[in-house]
Length: 318
Image (cartoon, rainbow, N blue to C red; front, top):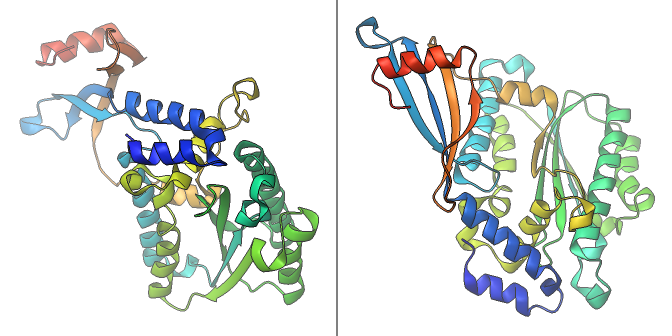
């Protein structure tokens, strides 16, 4: 799925070539999962035409963070958040604080002394977690959106953290937050490793621009822009993918989310549409065009045999 020209650029780059085989495996993963399909089967009881239950057989494809449907899901969540503040203006933040965190190790001036991508990713994520703990300690439990994206000239990770605040942090605290990343975490210089910007949310138009802010950073870590990926985008995404593997397989043994909202914002963004339906889910299954295999049943409901018989009786194919 990744352009062969871009993959060749990874292979030919003296520094990125160390990640070539990981990028190749990642590309194979994208290709193989594109042929997978998840099928949902159930019975819609109400509302249904003439009050008669109908069978539901829905193919949703195979969704992971590098699929277009996942992109759309993130957008849906962000729009949910935007309209939540539209409907509840009294709960909208009064200020936002955008903290952009980078590391000096991604600078081209370091040449061959650059830290390898996986080791740098491990160091960065550890420092990012510690930095979030510092903010929580001094600001309390605040809402935030955290987004990871690649540095455009190295493929190393950097972060955009958008915090939603009801009160302005004092200048002394802002100064502390500016220097903690540099002096305590040792992630680079004050001029290049951190940018902190505070804005006032005066009306709903400002709220919309706040939500649009993280949307603008999603392209390089999504499949929707894969045709525009540079060699650095490829290496970044391959390193995020490899991170979930155990250390014995070159990973970090942890899942790293490129889009990570606070728990309270997640509850707002994940609210389903208000629909009055009575649906009984029966089965979830997996098929793949790349593999010679029968349908794999991933989920069965309670009283599966009885529900399966009813599904067939209503004209469904199972």
